[in-house]
Amino acid sequence: MQRRVLAATEPFARDIEIYSIDENFLDLTGFEHLDLVDHCQKLRAQILQWTTIPTCVGIGPTKTLANAAAKKNPIFDRVANLSDEQVRRYVMDRFEVADVWGVGSATARKLQALGIETAGQLRDMQMKQARGLKTVVLERLVAELNGVPADAVEVIAPRRKGMAVTRSFGRPIDTKHELMGAVTQFAMRAGEKLRQHGLVAARLTAFFHTNRFKPERPQYSAGKAVTLHPMISDSFELIAAARRAVERCWRWLRVHQSRRHARAAGRCANASANAVRRR
Image (cartoon, rainbow, N blue to C red; front, side):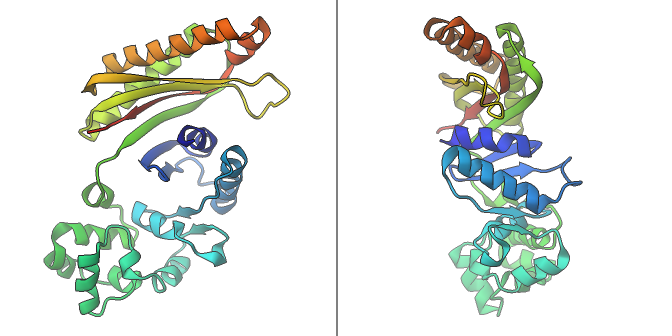
């Protein structure tokens, strides 16, 4: 199901960071010229159509603000954009400090003892006071609530449990050779991301599908997972695993589908190499 959510999400963002089983962060760089609220409503509609899963979307200049915006805010019709300063202040002044991403129960009690009950009050906290209360972690969180990216996610949150590299092709592709080339690039990028975050992968999944926006054509999707033992982050080993997975998918396609469907299935709209870390 997560794979279907990622496939539905991919056309709407430049990059996707898998944070948990039910939460992803999207990089909307390159989409600023659009009405982002309308853009994300279309994203929600596509996820609902493809998976029947209702979603909420938060938009903000930092991950902490985006997370806060994604909380249930009925007046925003499940898409809240906190990029606007006035909207941000309205939401923050009504948002309990205990619900702020990265504020645990012990920290919430300390803040409440100081009279800080809302995210807006935490946003206005002096940076030195924040550092003195809970070292650099709370200081970075205060910065994020003020719209200043401060890498708070990497400090506060657990390490990422997975990551995906997905792209739509500029044109349909018809051959295994072209598909292998694309998946090779994605696996290499996945290795770079793993090493950047100090992670190793225990499993890699490669998948691809036809263009769902052309329902009049035969539709096909395939994916195979490869267990990696020992766990790795080396790009060349990830590439080899991804190519083995694609080879299995393609062989199954040739055996089980007619020639007409095989050609259609080879005309892929996107491909993905997804590396998952398990300790």
